[in-house]
Length: 294
Length: 339
Image (cartoon, rainbow over all chains, first blue to last red; front, side, top):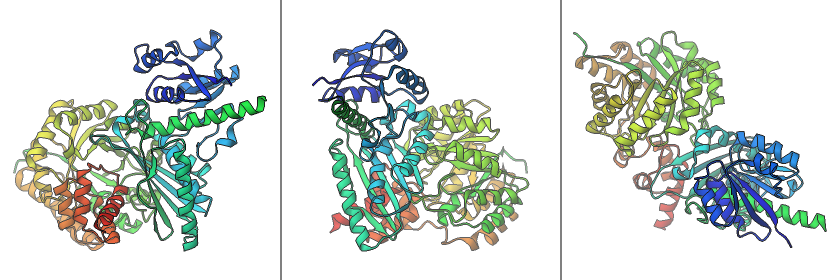
């Protein structure tokens, strides 16, 4: 069968890592990379990899009559607001990796199947992709009155976009903890650690459970383990740092995300989990489209 | 006598001091302390959860009171001093800041790890737009070399900070290091940007360090009543004022009211004495964030390990402020290694 033709908008860390992952996909073929800086490392790599490149922006590409099946937007929230409109008018599926959130949130491990018909989906944040599955793993067993996550990432893996607007990370992630993780209240904290060599992405997830009987705890444990195995199917370096710890009504889960080292080194698991989630959505979308078209 | 230096003191009892009482000061405590502080003549009073706006959490401990009740109590009890709040980008947000302004704060201190100033741009700029007194706070300055500190301080100044601080969050600096770092900032920053210094007493030199900072051109110095603060506490206000008087530093703070406030208002409210016990001393020795103290004691108890082993390991891993979740993970690992 023919693969879906994909364009990547944004040639920074996320866009470039995404390209490397899509090159391995059996369902998607990366054909275009669109940036703004012709000298960027991302565009150079894309060219070497045989993609068509442009530094003129998405609007120019669409004007020239190019019609990808799917477009990944790894630019900025502000730019995506414009891109979303262009893509909607052209009838092209959009996968939004910025915090713009014009479409519904998708956490790959939790609600992927619900949004295969949405013309624009938002991939939340790296912290969201890493932690919301755990909150959901707890809330599918027992009510969670409050969930809090702490994402610690290597300074080197946080690009200028993240740094200039760090509130977007905490606010978007908190909302996803509530709407998709199903905690009644959510809070997110992000910390940058400059240690050398850089640390792997670490996330701690705290959930306050409505019930903490031994039976519930066992079910929660089993549910968390199952979720970790599920995430590992598309992010192999996702793992528990230690056994979950129960204390009164609180469960604390600590995970580590080692990247595949596709573009940035393995410490940038935060980058990987975001791009891997976007690829996962795109592949499921491709399968869905193939089924519908049959 | 004629003073050689004139400075402004920011009291942090109601913010850093919150670490030492697990963020449990009540509205009544806040009112009593704020009012006693105001009578000392201190220029600025910082109040918030120990980890700043939005800090109330599982990770850092929940506050007894809501941010609204706590800040309104402090602002309502103060007539002369300016009430300011701390904000750590990544924990607190611009929205939190706007709410705090409605509660009555007139300044914000935006704190980042000493190599990560660029995450403070949004908050410093917004603070200026709101008409606040804005300070940039370079935490864990002992981990970062002079050149990099200068670079980061310049970023904060360029976003609009009125003052930039060298913050010895781990109480790990001695006087020569304070001198080098404070003087480098003073020389590098524009004249209209003040330099500040925030100490912890983990190595017993908070007053000496603060005086050294003044000599190198620091205009803002942090202190707290009875030293109430994370780790072995901050620079004790009353001690610093007395030493400053003898040294020729005009702090604007009256000595006897400061002594009385420490003795009569704050000390009876302490959960434990502020002393350089072995845990607090290990913080300074290993260069670990002072707020880890009570969290580390609890984790060490939970996993039956020596708290000093936990802290030294955290120092080796170059853990930064805010990473309180690492304490349990490290204690857990040490316990499992010992099995």
